[in-house]
Image (cartoon, rainbow, N blue to C red; front, side):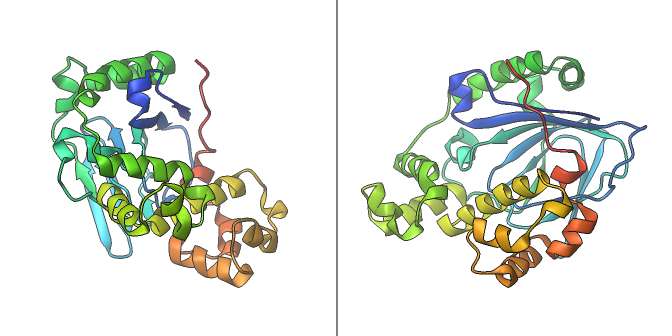
Length: 281
């Protein structure tokens, strides 16, 4: 199993990209075959071999395909088919970043979708071979990230920032530590203007985004502790739930299982792959 995560070194790229990541499951590795991927307000561009299949399941249906693809912001929890060996090189964008790309200007943000990346235009038009990039990611994480910075830089030079993206960027910096109803006042604009701009850029309400961020923080907290260490009453209070039953209902709705089931299975992607290790520059 190879896995790493690293932030872009180029400041202009880092304005739009949160991190690059790699996960590979080799044939000799046996892990949980159908992990669950929790909701995420950020989009990912996932680079994979053209003949490598993928499958995302929800209670309402399945999305299948092969090769590189977009994983757009999603409020659903996906069950992934990781029963076979695979490699994914990912580009995780900042929340709402796609709004500023020329291709997305004026379009309604896409949510809860997986979309095939048509060919590998983004790579091939800049002379980058996908297989070479994946091989580099396996061996030299830093060089791979530098290559991705160089690849993406011309794309981001075409980005445009309007008043909606600017106010959304400011809101995201304060969202996790703020009461939503007072955020407009903090940013010196009306709450209605803030809500409309935020939803236009991200496709999500402030509350939906804050809730997903809180879930992500809680799952990171759970991952770092053994099942014996988990005190669900304490966890409920730490993450702002009124009581333990409130937390149980929340997990059941968002992830499809109760705390007790989680303790037994540890079946989320963060549990299965042991998190990802930051690679120092």
